Length: 243
Image 1 (cartoon, rainbow, N blue to C red):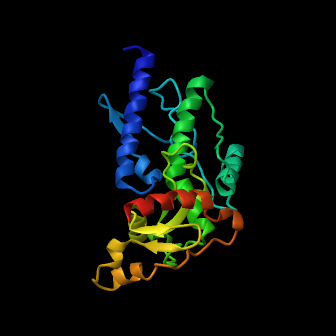
Image 2 (image 1 turned 45 degrees about the horizontal axis):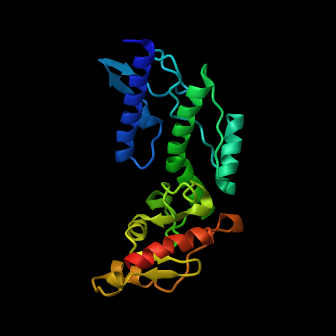
Image 3 (image 1 turned 180 degrees about the horizontal axis):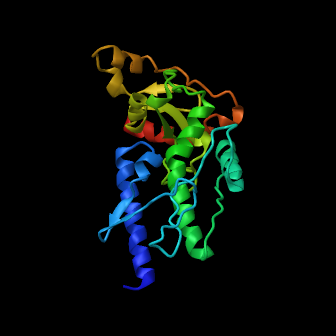
């Protein structure tokens, strides 16, 4: 088998392994990635504990799926990470990322693909939840482990679906599920609960959701972190169609 063909098959197998891990875990850490994966009877490492940019010895090109992403105020290990951190928190439409490699065209395509995946996992979640001081924007629940970073406009929308703080809202698991199912709608000014939920009577959990109707979300302290009104309006049109 040609070296380039084997390299591509290894890369495909690596991303498929990471995809399967992503279905099990909300976001991936070194603990989940450390065991690597098996390809053609040989264990292939996915990460190097000392480096974010990594190339297994079995491959010709880089296989970089991990980097250090510090919390606000935390230590930054690479110059490009300070820019990524700023871009996420300030709402830039594009994310830039530096890399090391021998083939800029090939490596940049894979690097940007990997960065987008990471942003939609740990980095995006971290940025959104931090902006709201670790609380659910609807219930005020102060436990980050029970929160998701919900997209206002889905990431498949190329125009408004970027992984930036103004396109995210921290929601508890139950509120996130209700938001995605269009059982809860958020227009630029207030909350709406669907007729489907309002018409049911079945205990305190349902009552807590119903009581959101007509209320407002808990906003982050910084104005630039607040939900984008145009994105909210677009998402709310979908709620009205379904509800």
